[in-house]
Figure 1 (spheres, rainbow, N blue to C red):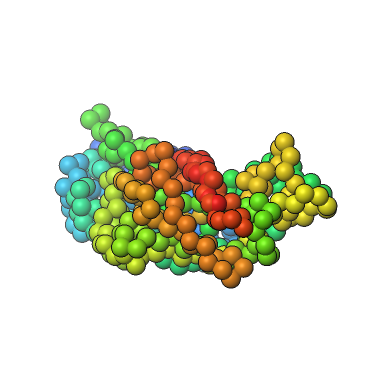
Figure 2: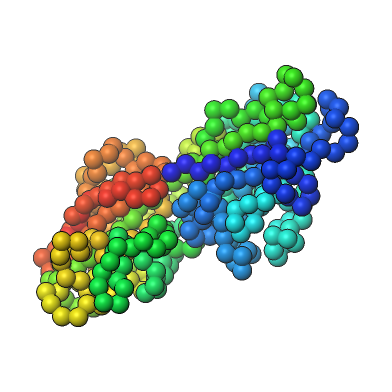
Length: 403
């Protein structure tokens, strides 16, 4: 799903207090009078501190210090060949932060201990035409001074911990204390992943031109930036068909290369291009893998009769294993081609490792901005993918797997 940032930055001028969509002109309205660069955004929620799962970027107010990351905006000249101000790119690399609702965006120089305490640092536009590039989350390092060379570091998180609680479910059905019912809660769309995941976004715009908007030849002071995901999401939901013995405690997932294969990459030096989100700088290594420790995930088990619990279900017309299974996710780099038997996933269940080869989906690749959801059946016979779906950062079934 693409995320929409409205850079009223360049039209709806903000005062130092950052009031959104309010035009505040200072000084004379002359042709070369600078205008303060501000931003408003309609982008909604970050499901963790970095994975954007909605159409806005929000955070929990009490977690401001860790979860309020902000966006970076880089301004180049009209040709995209140099920094807007003519100096180093650092002068034209602007940090915007919003409040916990994803509103009242303001440019800052220091984040402070709260949104109210952040140090405002207004950025001004002149008559000169500029070219805007934006990305999320804000980083201190932007490399390059031309449109084709602008990049930020984009490392993957090789390890992390996914923690679930009994009251958190994004399954199709939820347990209401006595039976499984439709999940109508806000949590149904929640992305459950490790908090360390970093969801890199870039502005996917064909028109990036701005100026102070005070001359007839000016492209204007406003621009809508459509933000797109640069990474791929891979999700798993597991259920027990009633034949796998044990408690069904899932404690680890490892996404890895099959022997001698190199599709999964976790290069430290990877970068994201701000112009189009291209990931570069990846090197080949057969031992690369992504590992997530899992806490609080008991695989729901089919039973034939008796009282139901959070971890048991009876198959009926509306209740099935896939529908009661929660989804857990991780981020990885996009792939243009996935041959058979080149990517494996290892599930650790009750202390035992189960290794399976991921099936190739109907689509040609793991595409950026898409969530591939694998449904896994844990069985005494084997672990098996039973379906695969594809979604634009929401969910689409990618396939079925049997253990």
